Length: 258
Image (tube, rainbow, N blue to C red; front, top):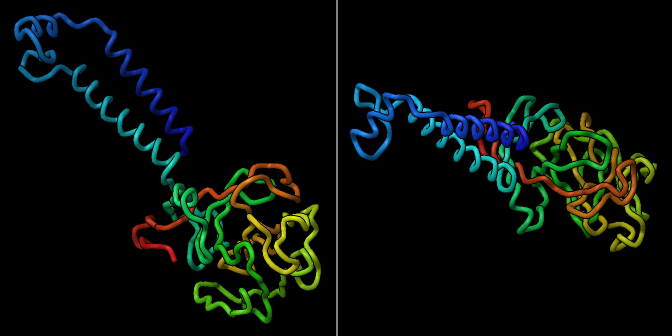
């Protein structure tokens, strides 16, 4: 359930609660209240009336809904895996918990599994692994990813990437061809610390299913904030939705994400 859907449900429950409260008390309820002098209306059997019980349940659901709305808007939310781009780490139909608060306090770390809006037209967030951060060098050669000149131990991937890649000359080169800034988010030179390191505010994201993942080797850099520098979403708001930290559904796949 999205925050908007949950908010709509809370509104419906609140309206029902108000309508029940405004309804005139029944004769039995009034008589019972007069007999006791105070307290909730009681049915002839001595138990609370149906209206009172319904209002108590509605109150509990509304409060729980407001708490849940706060949590999924500002702290933690669920994310459903729709594709196989992160296999074998994440499977289609997995449901994850995503920490939306973490990146407001600390910067993302290499290796984090991140939910974010990509720099291409889409209504859905993407989920990928963070492979390169600002100021780092990155190269893929013979199926091995090198970050700052060191080969990564990537036991989590489905298969080695079948392409060559290098960040150099203020661009991202895949099989020797630079990504086109008209089609990918590759910032202008003034955003780069040097010609061969990842630009400020930019992150290189890859799916664990390397050869079946629409990721940074296709659309360039993700961004932690601001607006996308180039590409089809240039000028649109960028950012990270959050850090995926727990796979909680289905039960057989429950576990902390690494």
